[in-house]
Image 1 (cartoon, rainbow, N blue to C red):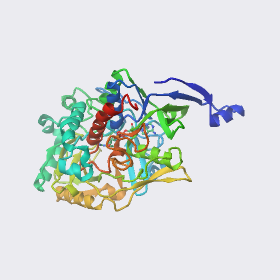
Image 2 (image 1 turned 90 degrees about the vertical axis):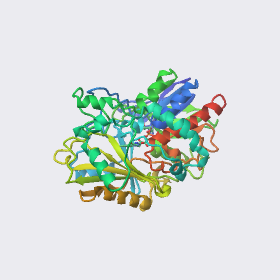
Image 3 (image 1 turned 90 degrees about the horizontal axis):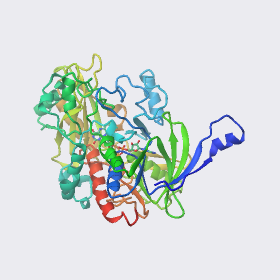
Image 4 (image 1 turned 30 degrees about the vertical axis):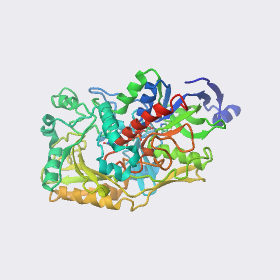
Amino acid sequence: MRSSRRSFLVGAAAAAAVASLPEPAVAATAEEHRVLVIGSGFGGGVAALRLAQAGVPVTVLERGRWWRSGPDASTFPSPLSPDKRLLWYGATPKALRATQDLIGGLLNFGPYVGLVEPILGENMLSMVAAGVGGGSLVYQGMTLQPSRETFHEVLPEQLDFDLMDRVHYPRVAQMLGVETAPDELVSSVNYKAPRVFKKRAEAAGYSVEKIPMPIDWDYALAELRGEMKPAYTDGSGAMGVNNGGKHSVDVTYIDQAVATGRVTVRTHHNVNRIERARDGRWVVHVDRTDDTGRVLEQIEMTTPTLIMAAGSMNTTKLLVEAKGSGAVPGLPDGLGTGWGTNGDRIFAWTNLVDQFGAAQGGPVVYGSKDWADPALANTVIQASIPPVPLLVNNLTMMVGFGVSQGRGEFRYDSWTKSAKLHWPASGDVPVHDAITARVERIAKNTGGIIDTHKIVPSTWHPLGGANMGVVCDLDGRVEENPGLYVLDGALIPGSTAACNPSMTIAAVAERALDNIVRHDVGVRI
Ligand SMILES: Cc1cc2nc3c(=O)[nH]c(=O)nc-3n(C[C@H](O)[C@H](O)[C@H](O)COP(=O)(O)OP(=O)(O)OC[C@H]3O[C@@H](n4cnc5c(N)ncnc54)[C@H](O)[C@@H]3O)c2cc1C
């Protein structure tokens, strides 16, 4: 709760004021809060809701904006004719500049609080999201739970798989309203690509099953009946579903958190750095911006309880920079290590034999699990693409992810005062080989596959950096740093066991919050 607010001029603005330059002044203010949560994705959403339900007032700081959708809305950008809404204004320009040269400046639009931030590290491009709801805004929504065996391949036994299987995974599934695509939809003309994938994968000897998705599929059926513009049924919802019906974190956890009356979500609040005050409390330095990223106010927020939920990349970056700069000297030694890609690999599949159809319904219907050997367990799914003129009949996407062994680390550069990910180029070779062999067998004799990873090594599933058992306990408490918690993908040790990450990030956060509410609320929170 805000207990004080002071205003004054800072930095360049103050200097400009003294020199009577016409530069607009940036107000600097100070506030105090009971609990601050940085980020409103899966970890932030679970933390805000469960603390609020326990009676604790919470302020959520989110750098992006709200993205409200509904039937026939045009909230989200089209993946085929992207505009400023696609990219986060702070997006790493180097990788993009190179890409823009290749694609003729297609992405050359002005700064905006857009949806996707590509973060370039050594040997690895990580894609993360921005906006209320975090990654759930742009994710396809695959909501997979590991088996006991795959779970224990990467996650500590003390998390208690049986408990999570009984309580926390089902709780997340219920919150997100996950359902598989109905047969009525899958048998329709637009869903030929998923059917082709199923036929080919089964012919190659793999089992295939429907993937649970956080989607009200009645929206897709309504599209087929012509009652709404297509968003699901032509694959065009790849960067956010305009029609609604997707149970993303903003319309589930965050809306319910706000409805308690105890949670305030502050959008356009970009956290620059954190530090520890002499009295042991946490100080969070925030820029409040407009839609273009222009700073309107600089706010110094102080709190006894700081929950890091900015996602693996940004939580780890903020923490490693706090440690490297000396702003939080006592952070654990393993901070920044143990980061992984979840074994991600994305393939373009050209199929000249079957024809996928003029419009590819999606986002995802089927996947094939190969989990027999937990050490190399992997899943391959087919994801539909937007209607690319001339190509869509022959092109779709296969995506694989699995138990990965490679681990990278964030290092602090005292010259630039920033943290950067360093990834060993051959980090994921065993699991990538296993995935590639399966994809090649599925696509055999149909045309060919292009492994996008060979062009740009990338991941949409960054995980770890403040790993449980190394930096934090299993409930996300940062060792030796009372009042500091990590409750997002940064807590997960590099892989979610042959599954996409959101289900496990949310379930681990749900488990942690049960314990935090039981043991910490009323004591240190
Ligand atoms: C295109 C795409 C498709 C994906 N598909 C799937 C899928 O099908 N299934 C699946 O399980 N996963 C998928 N993922 C991954 C999934 O979205 C992430 O694993 C998940 O969202 C991570 O949750 P989180 O709580 O760790 O952080 P996030 O959901 O990333 O939330 C972090 C939030 O913190 C905010 N933030 C970051 N830095 C700051 C700062 N300095 N100040 C203030 N706010 C900040 C961000 O804006 C963001 O809203 C996909 C990801 C992408 C990008």
